[in-house]
Amino acid sequence: SSLIAHPLRSAGKRTALAAQWGANESGVVSLYGSKDESAAKVADMEPGVMGKIADCDGVWCTFESAGYDGYVKQTEIWGAYPGETFED
Image (cartoon, rainbow, N blue to C red):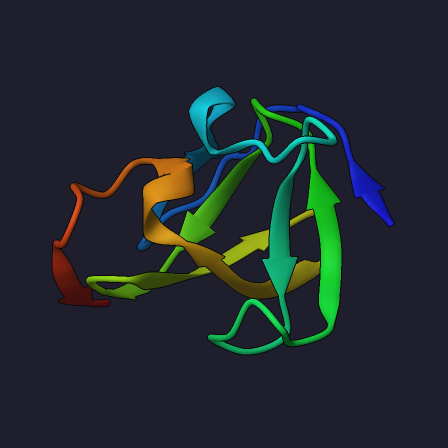
């Protein structure tokens, strides 16, 4: 599945953006089912897709958008500082 960019309004969680610099050679940012690049992909997101992040462990963040939820590498989003850890 692929997600396209669209605004997402939510309360209580931080907003994040799939970043252009995080895109792979196919031009997408991958959303995984677990904190592992070898895990099954939940979706491929175009840069600019907005979502909610509830926690980041310094490497991976949860990411929810358009009914999809999973994990994205923290360096591939805008909305959390590199290495930042937090829980919502």
